[in-house]
Image (tube, rainbow, N blue to C red; front, top):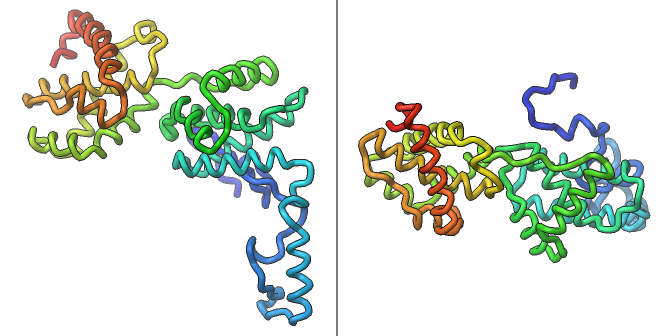
Length: 299
């Protein structure tokens, strides 16, 4: 209590009253026992009488989810979907709670009635992962895909349209994702590929040493490519191409053969080879121009 908040990442807990949970619709008052309790004890831990057990079991049944949520059934279903989606995307509780907070805030601020709670929840999830930057490197396409897998009609175009509508109505809008936010994820995908790790060892690399060298070089490469050159490129695919370019530069710097091929990078990250090849062409051209003014980049 009273601890100061550090860092730039948002914390949904600071917006929640004690005892309230953002990711579900709670009823008024307290629960009787635990969520699925059928055997009750008093405040001292002593078992209640048979008559009291029967009475409290009936009361707990009456206090059902439908009664607790009342007119908030649409909100309840949207939050239940959020919990399911969060597990499928393996998001931490902070991202989930921040999404729920944004969802409830948008609903309370919106002057018009919300007609598609699931689509709104998907956009709020997009806002949350963008706020957490590299701590939640989830793409727009992945959010749309996982909602569709859960049986909801959510696609990228609908999410973009809803995000623009929210911006004009409430002022809330997802932040633009920066390529740097995807570096930890791309490196994780590469280092979790047995083919990449095996080939790195054949090239004389320790896996952790190779990962650190790649991370440092990827940051250097991104620093030398201005936003004007990146254009409207998909930031995740762009970072995969940066990893491919960085691998070649690291190999020259340490006097070893390169580890990644376009095919190997494509297999590890599930990005099409032609996309890597297209992005790499622009990256190589830009870096070649930079080496004329910055000789150390050629190392």
